[in-house]
Image 1: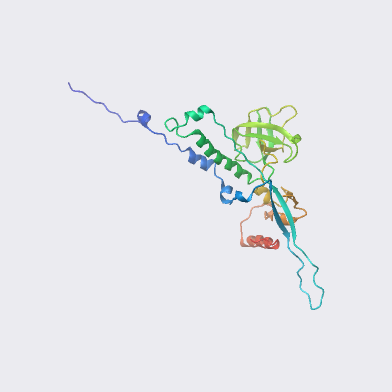
Image 2: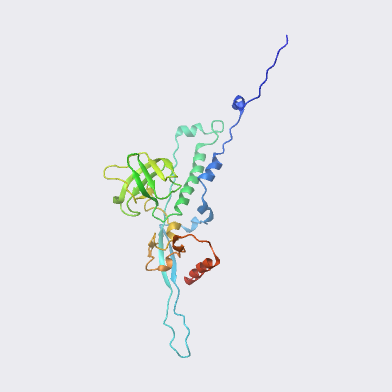
Length: 292
């Protein structure tokens, strides 16, 4: 008896069960969330840092007594170098991992999991740790990530003045009326971020914003939980003419203007770079005895 065979094209749905899945999340995470530009270009040597704090001497002014004189004329008044000792307290960053016994057991061999939980968590925790450190290397040393621009207590939302890549769901933030001070300046205790809208700079929080007498307000400063007063100094405080950090490593920038960064901002109006601007920067650096 003749038999007819009817065939049709194999579809992805039909063969889905035998297809392997290619995971590309690692590359996506690295490009989107884990690039650490500043950490990558800074050379670090932990062997030179230990104890309670680091101490170094900053040379602020040269001997300015040099002057030309005629024969038998009085010599210039004696001068001296102006130096100051700076003490830099160390900041300590911690990343904590926790594992359940059941999770460790379930992932203890390649037959039950693609990765062992301890190795996977520890390796990725190092990457996450570096990402946070990198963000603070751009800060002003206070730990503040931004300021509050607007508060919506009904919908538990806070709008911030500028964006920071640490504003991600799951992180806990707190607010305070000052960058540094006592706990009396706290206006919102640790509150978990549940949603973010980068376009509008809006953070949605898990818990009510008003708790007792605590209420976040406009111009309050936003911190990651526990970092206020504990963060390391960053580029915003170093490359500053005193408008952001008036006292740098214990030295007043008013008393010692040599530690003010030389700012060429053209009145905050954009302009094209030019040879004359470059030469002006070099000249200002040489005035302070710096090597361009």
